[in-house]
Image (cartoon, one colour):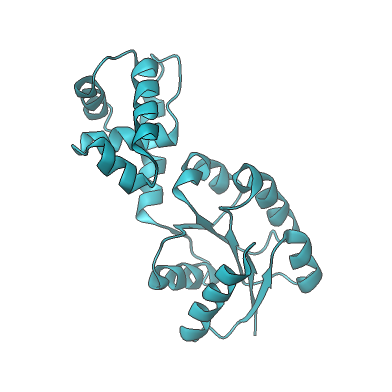
Length: 211
């Protein structure tokens, strides 16, 4: 029987994930650790069938930790649990060899499905993750005329305005404050050298920026 490694800083969250896996009758041994060092002590040289890594609470959104994890367990597929704030790093995560990404507010069925997919040698990226990555690629293809590159969060803000949502609605959807939405919009207008929401929506249409 193989093992599932659970890299989770908070014990309570880890217990919740373990309970979900047990209820789903996934019978692999679950090895929980708060750090890569602790995980290495518990696993030794054994490669787990999958590593579930809650990257949300790591310094620098987990880039260094992920590289170290991939170095220690290069044969094990890694499933990341991420927050919306990690969106700017999705491409970096994938380049590091991550095989799956889901958001930390995903339901139990999605978590189980993702783990089983990775254990079966497949990949799993939630639809929203692909929307963010695809939008980034599209804009970069058309950004040669722009001096500054839009961040993933700014792209998501454009998408939300293009849907006709208000500041409050966008803030609630992205779990940020309306004031933060305003700040992002100001940066977008400055980067694109435009002056209004209507121009921003027109830019989104012309560059195929949509969910």
